[in-house]
Image 1 (cartoon, protein in one colour):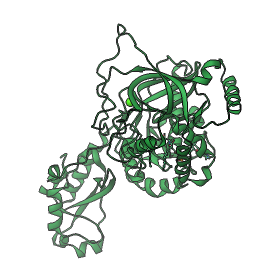
Image 2 (cartoon, helix red, strand yellow):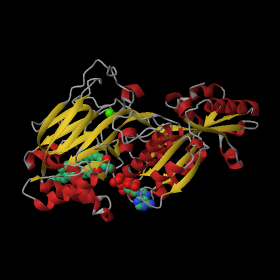
Image 3 (spheres, protein in one colour):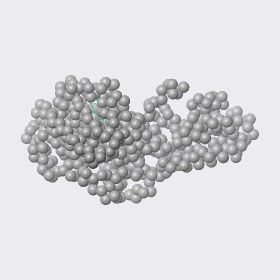
Image 4 (cartoon, protein in one colour):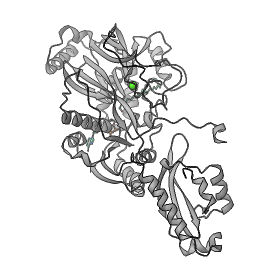
Length: 507
Ligand SMILES: CCCCCCCCCCCCC/C=C/[C@@H](O)[C@H](CO)NC(=O)CCCCCCCCCCCCCCC
Ligand SMILES: Nc1ncnc2c1ncn2[C@@H]1O[C@H](COP(=O)(O)OP(=O)(O)OP(=O)(O)O)[C@@H](O)[C@H]1O
Ligand SMILES: [Ca+2]
């Protein structure tokens, strides 16, 4: 029964499209391609047969036709999913009902599917289309799948995050955010923060082991970068994401915690970047009104400024994972945890320390694939292995840095440069040379000194005292940070990037 194709033994079939495709065609569709796992059926409905349909089709020959329609997930080009349907006809009412009943019972057994969701919409994210995208593309699919939702259209930044601390979240099967990476970040901070509060875990303690969140998050992409969605689904397409939510896919992902002097700053799931990406973000925030193009302008400007920053990076290599950031095969499709072994108490943690002048320090918890760079900052970065890929780009010429950037957009290896190093790490710390000397205990003190350094040392040709950290698209105020990866802290409604079936497999 798992394969709809078998239904043809019992029923006649036709697509109920306005064009009423001929039987022979439909049979061949069934024989060749229409084999759908029950887990990818969206819903089954009894089909009303109107007079027009009845008189125009071959089922006129049936004394009295009965029909049901199966809505299912259909793979389209480039990781896109679409909702498709096929209608099955027969002469016996009982048989038809039996099929509907049986399929419904099978669907009922899929307990991983959400029934009731909490939805946050950022009406101002990306091209400001969040509300329209949700209403036009997502709601019809949720209705079809009988998913109900409580919708909150955010009124200000942090609305979603704050509300997740207040709301009774137990009645929901998941939280959906309609927006970009910034909106996703808000929802994950709300959900992780709420879970720790409920479990009595102190987020300010960098050594605390955090409690995993029970609710899954679904991302309906409607932002500027949509890197988390792109890197976990393979495309930033609202319909595809809605279908992943409906069928109840699950994908675990690592989350990094960022601390400064035993104070919790932020969580990061995609990019934690100092230097190049920090400077782009700081500059682009002033240009928010420009929309999407702000990143390209700030990127160009930051590229021309060519600033490097001196500091020390100390990290704990991730020996427990298999694979390396230099692996050729990307981990796109792999959602499984690749931990080889947990670090036993007898194993000594060996920190590695690197000092230097850097154009960029990037920690990628996932590939960071996005439309700008389809393979991402670290193509082989693994989503759920408890590690992050730490990329150090040392001071080099503008031309070399450009060559490095260009390799993010083609098939060449962006790590194959003498000035680029990449390590798979479980924890790392960064201290800027300039804050190092005088970094006090207090955050505010740090900020004040940061200000002083900037005015005391006007921008010299290349080496600047401090950059800022870009944490998933948000600016951090401290340059000295301590980062730790928490393995599989969060679950998404996604399944990782599926391998495209080869021609052979299709035939
Ligand atoms: C010559 C072309 C080279 C193109 C190189 C492209 C590399 C792009 C890599 C993108 C990585 C995105 C990482 C995602 C980070 C997200 O957590 C965060 C939140 O959404 N987004 C940003 O911070 C937003 C970050 C936005 C980054 C935009 C980078 C644009 C670089 C433009 C450089 C121009 C050089 C031109 C020289 C003639
Ligand atoms: N109603 C609101 N008004 C103003 N800001 C909001 C509102 N709702 C959410 N925000 C904030 O807007 C920021 C950007 O949102 P979002 O990520 O959806 O869009 P974006 O344009 O793609 O930005 P990003 O570049 O961060 O991906 C988020 O950090 C969020 O906190
Ligand atoms: Ca990881």
